[in-house]
Every structure is written in structure tokens, then in C-alpha cells.
Image (cartoon, rainbow, N blue to C red; front, side):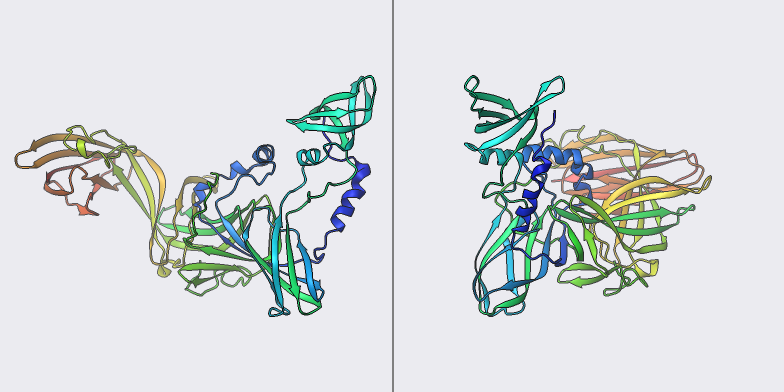
Length: 521
């Protein structure tokens, strides 16, 4: 069985209800500035599929019950007729996820003589449950199946409605009360839309106007649940010495509104916002250049306060419940790249912070990880065909298979905002033919002298046909004061706890690092 909200015979009623609204009919001049405070890995796109949205409709009464972590500022210009004195103005087609406290209204025609007396936001949208709740003690017409292809239409008064069950007064002396399951009915007919229910979120202003006639008005507000990030597509050359870097903007719109032919701006940077009191669900070749080169319709990047602003040179339509991609800048070609092997012998899940009482444990941190990680490293510099502010994004890397010329996916990572002249490091995965081995060879402690000695042997083996350089990373975490008193190769001190031993491994060969560290306290 199916449940029909309204039978076709009542279509005219809905048309009349929409026509009665007093908002302007002409299209709005819309500008949309999107801010994002979520990394690309923090928004699983599949979580906002149609099936999940239907679940949100059931759970929250609206498909917009789940929020994306981004937000946007919407500005719309329209022409509206105002009379002298007090006017009531209704503004439809606003985002369902609007923050009503951010709404502003301005008459561009007479800003000094037009002022808002009060404003409100009406969001009691019509739904089957709300419509039935509003029809208590009122007559409705239900159509139900009697089996064997027979149906019956019955006029009855709705006495109560809860959890899909309706209690109806039929007027039949023999069976005056009927309990019906809403899901078993074919149709339910209503005479009119009850007061207080609306079909779209609506802003309502009471305002005083000193000048009668047509006004150019501008409305601005913030809306939630719209997010953007950059998606970078990297193509690694066959010799693995250069990259082609392409960039796209990915926008997910779940704000509850579509933005037709909007002026689109994107803000890259960590913009601070005041924390909310509730729990939420969980570019240019120079500093002012055109990112798309000869294509003046692409994004133009410029510094803006302590952030970067990207403005699209053509109107864009961002539809509700959609994922959209727009090219951020044309591919940068022949970008020099270096492949880096890193062996970190501690297991990935090892944590030493908060374990001060255990730093004298001989076996602390001797568990072993055998995998050698692979990174691609390149410089975001103009002389290397980049040198532009790179917004935070997802980086996907492919390489051409020379056998058939196809691009094959070889790794993916996420990046933070990267200024020009800074390094980009992309984690690709773990090497198949390069492995590591780490073991503790000695441990001595003299509590009277407050000294501790610990020795390690790290082996890196390569089964590749060419020599590789592997960066052996070690964390010296037992005490803050340490000194490497014995070593078989040079190292670089990266920070107060980290050292790097670069080693060269011959084809089908092995390299060994040994060192002894002395801790004092």
C-alpha cells in the first residue's frame, strides 16, 4: 500500500497557496561566499546519499536534520514595491539551514528612510505528520483497500493521530470509531492547508518606509551545511621525477536552498567563529594573478585579510543536495618531485605521552613495525611551475601504465592550507619491496647517577633493482635530556625528540643503523 499526501484533484489548492505569498516573483541577484572549517577527509560524501537523506527525513522530520560542517554567507538583491508607512514583507526561498540571528535587510534605494521594526523566521514546513496533527477534530477523506481490487472512500473526523495510528469518528451508527494505520491507506484528502504551516522557509519583516514605490533591497544571512575544499589530481611521470598538478573545487550543498547564477566566492583559511551552545552532528601565479591564466572566466585569487579569497569569473548555479566540481586552476606541468622512503620502527599505534611512570621499563617502545612508508615531496614555488596559495584539500595521485597508456591510481592523502614557497608532502602508502627491522640491543640504567643507556639496531632491506635512499626516523622519548653517544652513521636532529638517519640501500641489499642514546634526569 502507498500513502498519498494529496490526491490530484487538490492540485489547484496548492497552486493557490503558493500564489498567495507576497514575495517578489522575479529572480534574485545572488552572491554566495562559502567558508569551510572541515578537511576533505572529514566529510564522507556517501553519508549524504539519497538513502541517508530519507533516513534523516524519518528521524528529524526533514532531510536537513544532519549538518555538514561548513557554512556560507548568502546575499540577494531584489526589487520590491513598498508603500509609505508600515509594510509586511515576506521573503521566501531562503536556505532551510539559515541562522536567523545573522539576517540583515537593507533598502539600497532609500537606506536612511527604510528601517526594520521587527523580523521573524517561519520554518514550520508542511509534512504529512504535521498536517494530520493540525487536522484533529476536523473532517478528512480516507481511501482504503478492501481486498480483491475493491477500494472504499470514507469521510470521517480525525480524533487523534500518533505513531502512524489514526483514530477516526465515522458517523456510522454500527461502527462509529475506526482505528486506521496510515501506512495501509491509499489516499488521505484534506480540504485546505491549515494556518501556520508553510511550504518553504520564510523570512518576514515589518518595516517602515518613508518612500513609496519600487525599492532595490538587499538581504544577507549565514547558512549552515554547505562546504568546499580543493581536490588535487596529480599525475606522476613515467620516470617519477616530475608531476602534473591539476586542482578542482568540490562543493557539497545541503543548506536547503539552490543558488541560481550566483556570484561565487570561496574563502581559504581558518576563520574563527564563536562556539555554539549546542552540539552539532557529527591558486594564482602571483599574489593577485588570475588562476586560470588566459581563461578569464575561472577563479581569481587574492589575499584577503589573513586568508585567501577565490572569486569565480562567471555565474555559477549551486543546487541543493548536490556535489559540484569547478576547476580551480589549469594543470601545472613539469613540477619536480622526489620520492621519499621513510622507515619508522615504532608501531603506528604506539603512544608514549602520559606514560612518565613507565619510562624506566626496558620493554617500553621496543615493539616493531616492518613497513617502509612512501611519500612524494615537491616545492610549491614559482620556479618549479607552482608558487600559488593551495587551499586545504584531498590529493589523488595516478601514474601512466606504459603498456596501454591508462592512468592507474597509486595513492591518496589530504593536505592543509599550503602557502607559496612551502613544501608539500603526500603520503602514498607502504613500499612492497622495501622492509625494515628494528630491535633493542642493550639497555642499562643507573638510578644513583640518574643515567640510562639504550642501544638499537635498525636494518633496512631492499629487493628492488635500483638503489634507494631511506630516511630512518627515531623518536627519543624516555627523557627530555638525551645525547647520542655512539652511532655508525650521521644523523639530523629534527626536533627535541626526533632524529633522522638517511641511509643508502643498494639493489637487493641491506643497510644497518646502530646507535646508543644516553638519557639523564
